[in-house]
Image (cartoon, rainbow, N blue to C red; front, top):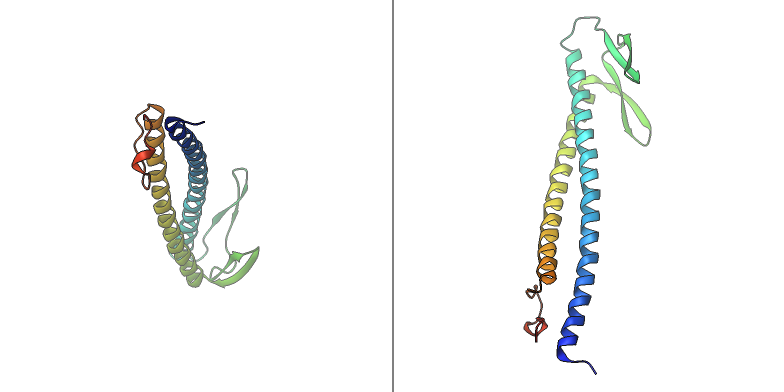
Amino acid sequence: MSTPGSESRAVTEEQVRDDLMRLDMYRSQLSQMLQQHQLITASRADHQRARETLEGLDRTGSDPELLVPVGGDTFLRGSPRDSAHVLVGIGSGIVVEMERPKASQLLADRSVRLDQASRDLETQMRSLEERITVLSSRLEALSQGAERPGPGAAANDVVGD
């Protein structure tokens, strides 16, 4: 036969297990979001550098010399044969040739979309961080024996009867 106190304790233990699982899930989601944010930030910087390079070609002389990275901090000297056209990746390994001003605008548009994606992700991360804080505080209170009923909890769910 169970006593009223043991039922409250069982409910609390179950709540603690659920909260711990939820907290672990939230932390995992936050970690994944941070990785996504880093990728978006790196992509944004890459797009910005490409755009600045394309626009910088307009400010160079008639036969600009470029350093072409080939990997491992190794570069080739070269100059564009047709500086009016560039090759731009459009996804899935597909590359198209377009005029430099159009490519520059495409990169600018992508940067705007990346900025928006970054802001949206930051909002989601803040929301998740708030959930983690609330859940961590509740678990801390439970571990100290000073449980406060959470949202939606009935007053008779308090331990200590």
